[in-house]
Image (cartoon, rainbow, N blue to C red):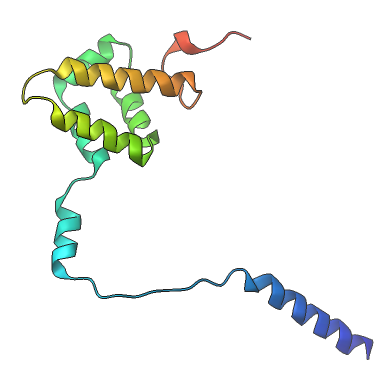
Length: 129
């Protein structure tokens, strides 16, 4: 009888363990328009990356001491909300106009993430311990 109890207790314990891992699934039809709309709009990170690929932006960031790879790593580390904010500010700039404002914004975001310890781009933000 103890072997039956032991098997029963083991079955009940494993059942209770795996009860929490069940997930519900929902399915729905997706229209062709939704697929095209999702693929046609570039993401915020792609728009920021396109702005970082411009030669004048790269040269200005290098003058500030930030390499293109470091800036791209920072963009990848942004939250979705921060990326959306940055992309909307890039979109609101006049065409061919005030790129300095965008560069200052990127610099400030990089500086804040460096001060918070999320990245290590600027050596002057590190504390000496």
